[in-house]
Structure formats: C-alpha cells, structure tokens
Amino acid sequence: MKKILIISDGSVGEHFIQRVIETYTSENIYYVIELKAKKYEEVNPARFKFYEFDPTSFYKLSNLLKMEFVQVIIAMDSQLDTENTIKNIRLVKKNLRVIVLNQWDMQNEDSDVLMVNSNEILASRLLDYLPNVPVIAQNVGIGEGEIMEVLVPFGSSFVYRHIGVIEQKNWRIVAIYRNRKLLMPSRRRMIQPNDLLVLVGDPAVLKSVYRAIKRELGQFPEPFGSNIFLYVDMCLVNSNTIKEMIRRAVFAHKKFKHNLVIKVVNPSNIETLQYIKEFRDENVIVDIEYKSRDLRATFYKDIKYYHIGLVIVSSEMFGDYYTRNTLYESHVPVLKLSDRSFSSVKDAAIILTNNRDLEKISSTIFDISEQMGFNLEIYSYVNEHDDDKEQTIEHYNNLAAIFSKSIKVINENENPIRELRKKENFVHILPFTPKVKKRRIYSLLSTDSEKLYYKLDNYHQIFLPVQL
Image (cartoon, rainbow, N blue to C red; front, side):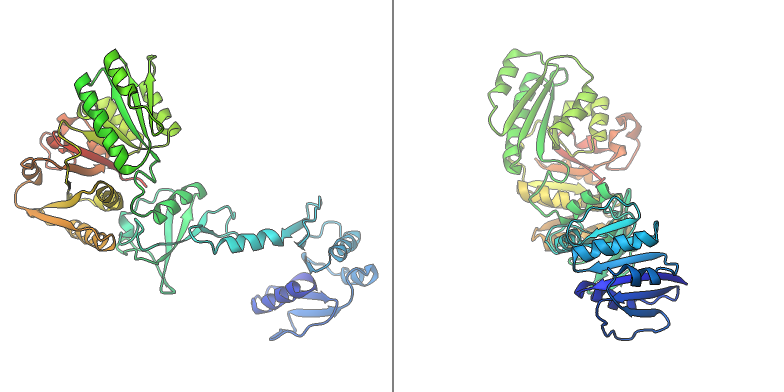
C-alpha cells in the first residue's frame, strides 16, 4: 500500500478530498490533515485516516512524517501557511515529493516540489469553452496537444466523408461522439454534422487538421495558402500567351479575393515585362527573377515565402515534365490555363474513377465552384460499375444538400473524356496524384481518366492535392 499525505485548508482542498474519495483504488491509503475536520460522504475508513491540527506546527507534523509517504499534496488558502508547511516537511524529509496548489505564483527551486499554478489551469479550462478553439488533453500523454477534441460544424469539409478516404498521415481519428454516445471509427463510417471527433497525432499536424475540419465554403485557397501565384517561364511561353495568362489570372484573383503574385523567370522580352509591371497595385505583386538560379529551389522558397495556396500556369508549362513534377512536390493546387476564355466558363466537370480520391477533395471542389459560380457536373462511365463510385456520388449529393449547391450526375455509355471534348468550354477538376506527374508516353494504352488528363489539354484544368 502506498501512503499519500494530503494537507488541506479551504474549499479547493475540500473538493479535492471528496474527488479522491470517489476515485476508487485499492493501492493507496490516504492520510488527511485539516485545520478543521469536515464531513465527507462514503468514506472508506480502511483507505482514509483523518487528522485535525495546524500543519504549520512542526512538532505535530513531524510526528506524522515518521511514516514513509510516497507523496504529499498541499491545497491551502494561505500562502504563508503553505510556505511554512513546505519548510516543515523539508526539515524532516529532504527528498519527499511535494505537489503544491499554487494560487500566488510562488517560486521554488526544489526539484522535488511541483507547483501547480491554479490560474493557468482555470484559464486553460475556460479557453476550452471558446468557439473555434481546439480542446487539447492536458493531463494525458505529454500534454502538448497530441490528443485533441474537435466539434465538426454543419458546413465543415469533413461532413459526410467516409473515414476510410480521409488521408490520416501522422494522425488518426480514434473516437466519435454522436448524441453523447461513443462510436468506434471504421473505414465505412461517415462523419456527420455536430460529431465530436477525438484525434491523436503529432501536435503540429493536429493544428492543421483542426483548421481543415473547421473550414467552410468561401475560404479557398485556404487551407493550402492565402495567396495566388502566377508562374511565368518566358522560355516555355510566348508573349501573346503570357498576356492572356495575366488577364485570366487577374480575373481569378478578383473572384477568390486573395492577393496575386506574378513570378517571372527567364525574362527575355522587355515589352512583355513592361506589360506585366502595369498590373502592379496593392493586391498584385510582380516578382521578376533576373538571375539564373536553381528554379526548383526558388519555386519552393516562393511558395513558402508568399504563403501560396493556388499556382496558375500555362498548358505549355504544365506539359513540361520537370515543371509538372515541381508543381506536384509543392502540394499546392494548380490551375492550368488553356487558350479558351476563362471568364466565360460556366461548368466544372469531374470524372468518377475507381478510387476515392474525389471524395478527399470534394469540399475544395464545392468551394471553388461556389466562388467561381460554376455548375458542377459529375461524369460516370456506366459500363464500369463500382461500389466506390456509388459511395462517392452519395457523398457529393450529401454535400450538395449541405451547401445548397445543385449538381448534375451524368451517366455515360461512352468514355466521358470523349463526351467532354464535344463541349464548348468548361473547367476540368481532378486529383493531383502521382499518375498525373508521370510522362505521358506511359499512359497511351491506359483507360484511367486521371492518366489521360492531357486528352482535355485544350480546356482549363484544376489539379487538387489529395493530401490534407
């Protein structure tokens, strides 16, 4: 049996003793010192021994300390009494571990004395009740935020998503509370509005996950970043195309209401550079790289420095294998512009595949469609029935109901790519997966619509990373 000494004086100490009484354990025996004896309910006399005296009295306290205690807990209302009680304990027991309720910001250099700051605990607990602030487990694990509780709001990007399609790298959903009942997570379980999720993982990752769960429509390009980045390589794109890109990028920047950064590398045409500089204002930054450097390293540096959430490139640049790989490794959405008008686009098209990647990026697709005013069309190849496709369609229909956004599911007997090439104008939205970054020659005999994305190269395309 481990002997624990509790020294109490005041309401906090009284509440603490009652909680200890209600906490069953057969391994501990408690010796309680109080200035005035209190009456407690359901006390087990075999586990609790009560004493009534002043703990600042060295004579009385030293007699009790002749027993071997593993720990002392002090919860008193007087700073002076607390300090003198600690001194009395140290005169008898030099290395006994002492836990002190610190209500006065007391300082103590004794390594065996742990000061529990009551103000910090109360402030932290009150913080848990603020809206849009993550609730972090502080007394479990290392207490740095590796266990988090998040309430899923009605318009969250996680609502009506199956747990199995949520990318969980360095974090996990370990429990779901719905209507005050515990549900164990499974791959096929769907998250619903007002679910309380318990997350475990790396504290830094959980902060990003929290922001993603709380995100609602109208935030894109968040959470990827806060600004739009037009990347222009004058070695790959001619002057007329660059001018068209600038106009279309400015149009997108005004729709998304985020700052635009125009980055020019390999500058070679003075007239075009002058044209680009004319767009400079408080919301448009023009950054020209005159020196020849490692463009890949420079690109990653710019993405981080400008906090980029959407990169805009031309079809010629995206067609370049090395540029495409650089864009993929940045894990940022990419808008690839074609020669068609961008301001006249009314429809956004997605093609269902046999994987669940489209469910992972669904909220971002709805966000883009909402901000740009696109009608959302889902193309399904009926000759390839698959349960995953049905679940993806169900997921999109649920999101459409939440966001009051109509969608159109089109079942095609023909290859959807062939049918889409008959349309005048639209934007094709698809996951930015490793399939897209591969050389095109390897997909010539494939029937995978993601690998054959370049068949729709004459239309605008948005590539969305599947990572959270």
